[in-house]
Image 1 (cartoon, one colour):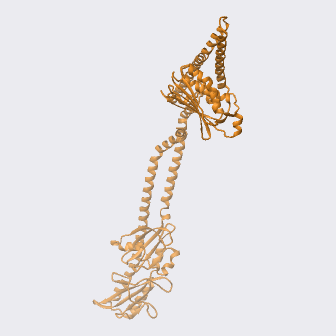
Image 2 (cartoon, rainbow, N blue to C red; image 1 turned 90 degrees about the vertical axis):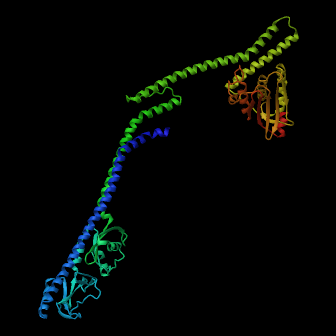
Length: 587
């Protein structure tokens, strides 16, 4: 309970914070998820648009130059131009359109007829064309002597629907490289172009242009596979880990009708940087709000719980016996009423305690008075009666001697009673010497049999054979035996028996006092050795308390067993002594 109260203010603060901030946290979580999803869709869509526009520009760039070559082919066929005119036209085209390094007119056997090149022409009809579109055959991209990407366009010429030769143009793709280099997304997002055969033909990252020179094959790239598998050439996107171990957002778009693929890659850390920053700011804002609410709730909870803590401390003090404890709660609300009720309860408890003490004192005084009267009245009356007899002149000598013995006996009883009272208040120290328990029992039995006969009860002794030596005090132990036998006689009806027996059990000597009396109720056995506790209707109940104190001073133990209607048995145990010197000292 103390632990719960101690943390009640904390739990109150958490409850208040939960009630205020949980909706905010839920809203923040939904917002973060929506932000992540929206950012992913927005960034992916933007990058797809970039890749699509780049594919469109590359397609337009290549197609427009192919169209120029087609227009030139239309000018050359079916016009009746001689070779000189054709040669001039080809050279003018090369001068006007710088992307063409060479344009050559070949016959049907692919032998040069005229060429813009001075010297032997190099352009040839592609043996293994990369792609064909609108009647134009395109060769795979290769690097020229200047290290620039180059391809060859070839158009089959006809005359009156009969094959008439080929118009072949060597075309530089340097402008396409520049276009790819200009495609930048953020600081580290670049584009690349992959040919239909999987060769990497352009890369915007300066650190990876060497891959183009190596003609790195990209057919194993997941984006290339996926975009080629798409019907209609729809753009695709994917998040993956590149060969350098970086997480990338990649998008791919197909370049129609060339069959090329444009890929745009951007690191995820950069692509979602704004969303991540906004997410961090949102988390920080929610955390700060949560901490503020917890702090406010804790302070408010402390002020709210403070009266309860005050009442808890006061209750503990009252439970510890400080009945003068009072509380002062000035909140003016129900807690103040509770404090007043507590003070009223404490006042009432104080009054009740004083009443109980007064009643206990009265009861104790009455009990002590009744016990004194019970234990002293009979001996004093006997002393008074026999003293009166001694004062009479008609009493003979024998009667006087009997009166003297009775007076001595009763005075001994009174002295023993007073010694018991004194021993309860201030126990006397006992010196222990070697002694024989059997001898002490035999000594006590001389007087106890007379008292038993007077009450019609047989008092017997059964001593162990041999020595029963202990360290003890003969007079103190005699008082123990007399108290136990006297109690047994008083608890036994006439014609009953009281037996005191000694026995050697291992390293101990046991003395047992057994009677055939009425027995003791089980619930009273726990307190039978306490002071002022007795099973008799009268008396102070000092005998067993004194007996237990003497036994423990002598280093022994005393136990009791009883059955109602069958009798009671007290057992006293002392450590035994075996040395012969002790036996000699005892004798």
